[in-house]
Length: 154
Length: 322
Image 1 (cartoon, rainbow over the protein chains, first blue to last red):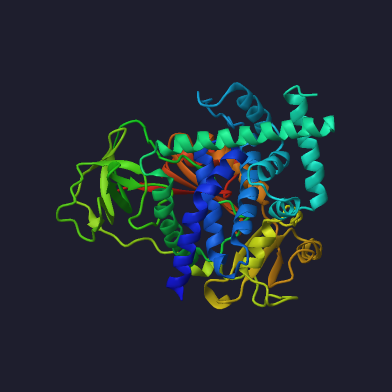
Image 2 (cartoon, each protein chain N blue to C red; image 1 turned 90 degrees about the vertical axis):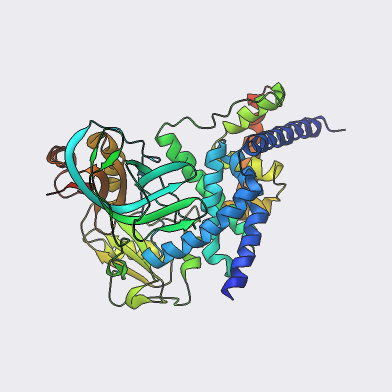
């Protein structure tokens, strides 16, 4: 039984690792932190893995909360955050938008990432963030308004 | 045609493109790394399983709210003045493809093979040493080591002797009270983990919270242990029960709060100086453990002056050999 459970978690890990790292990266902005947070999130999933009905959603929730703590800790310690070098392959308009997204407060940024990168519904985002769908809706509206102002769109 | 909707659609498209571009950027930078994320994932899930087993066996389900080794120098590029004093220590020495023999300091990843970083050991020779383990290009073992510092490395002065790996005192992880009470005895560790991920979860008046359940008399009973300041046990119980109906112990005891201990933990590296390695908060005992290379009298005096006697427990890696 233990072996089966271990195999299933190994498969889950392999399937979800890259996807979760990308999500973490979009939430915190640095690749090394993204990998650490993903590793940490998956390590917290593992003890509960057998009894989880929706391990992907659970892992996403854990990751969201770890990213939130990471950002507030980083802010407290005044570490340079989201200091991502701009690669040549990304055009200027994309960079401008990314900078604006990266400057959003954590919960607004999370809503934007989960909605426009993960393509989650309001209900799924609410589950991941542990809040009501109405809160997601208002966070989304505020984040879009802020992004619109930031990048100078009407 | 709705112009507002068109504007929103354009904005949303730009957001999608920016996020996709940035994720691609991440993949481009990650693919430059040696193993690639697929191989890394394959390796790391094993590390999680081994690590989880070890952690569960050693410390039980330690509190989410206990901050362990938050302050850590990481790779421990130790540099200090050369010192003619001969010191002795017991610990794990490990050599792998990325570094030569090093005395592990700070966190050792209990993977197979293990991984760690620490203080380079000069004059080290594995040949003939007892109790060595080897997996692939990694060699390690636990030893009693005598040596001096040359400023950057430990220089052996005697042939290392085999030593036992450290053990953990399981008694420390018994529940805080003899008869934990549950309103809903079916709740377990997974329920607690899920609860602590809820943003609204909070027990603001508690001094410390930790969990027990993997060892000791409480075996198979998951218990949330809560320390409350004297006179506030009922208030803390009320705060806890608003979220958690499983087994719990709430005990009144006046000691520094978690926040106060974390403040001390944050300041320790500056107070201790270059001998500092890691610091961890023990909210159960109300103190901060500081791992240091050497606990000399001057360091102890600085710590006592800064935080008061008894709040920080210095744990030296090296002690002078008699």
